[in-house]
Every structure is written in structure tokens, then in C-alpha cells.
Length: 181
Figure (cartoon, rainbow, N blue to C red):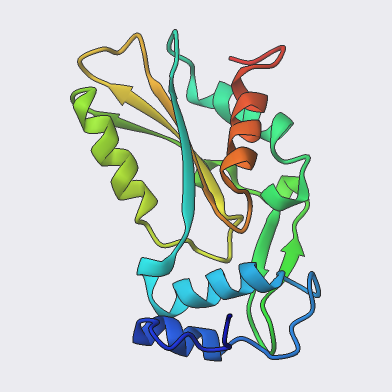
């Protein structure tokens, strides 16, 4: 049985849960779970929920090609163009025109010395706090100094954008379709 405030929840989780509007309607903005996750993360960043997918690419790709691909494949979906607007009441999704999404903030290249450093980079990136004024996803092209011919592509999304299956579908749209880099 669920109660409105779990009795064994850490204090930050309990207080965040209490901040949820009692009359929150599904998709009157964010649905109930998305509202809960957003509220929890704003109270305590340890409760942020990020999902990720990574793959070693067979050949290097240019950053601008990855940005072009993200624009073509991801920005056609509103979840990749929407930001969280918090104010009075429940947070709400605000959809942006595709041209208003600054891909330089969402698709970046980073470098690490060795393949072993990729996991540490992904772990650190998954712990970063999301800026709700931007769409809640990003891609990284991780260049590995010891093996520059095989970069790693990593997609990160807040769980309110996609679950594990959703991030895999988005990742496949970027790399497993005709015209993929």
C-alpha cells in the first residue's frame, strides 16, 4: 500500500513528495511521476534520474555531423525540444521550435586518455544536475587518446524524457538508420 508520504523516505524525498500538488493532472504539464522526479531532483540532486546509452563507433565522426544527425532525428520529437517551466502549481512542459534548441549545448565532444576512463566520464556526466531551462538530453562524442580511430558516443537523457527502451530507440535512430554517420 502506498501512502502520500512514505514513512521511511529520506527527509529530502519526503519533503519533495509533500511539495507535489495534490490536484496534479496527468499531462496538465508533467505527468505525476515526471513531476515527482523533477521535484525530488530540485530538492536534492542525488534524486536526479538519468538514463544513458553508449557505443564504441567503428570510425571517427565529426562533431558537426553528430549535431546534424541529432537535429534531423531527435528534434522532430517534442520531448527533445521541450523544457520544464516551473512556477505556480505543477511544473509544465514548454515546447520550443526546433531552431531554438542550441545544439552546441546538447552535443559536445570530450576527450579522455584511455578506454578505461570512458566509464568514469559517463558516471560523472550521469551525476550532473540537469538545467530545466534546456531540453533534458545531451550527446557526447568521447574521443579516446589511446585509440582515436574508435570514439564512443554516449546519449544521456533525464528519465522524464525517455526510459531505458526510449533512449535505445533514440540512439538507434542516430546511428542505425540510413544516412547515419
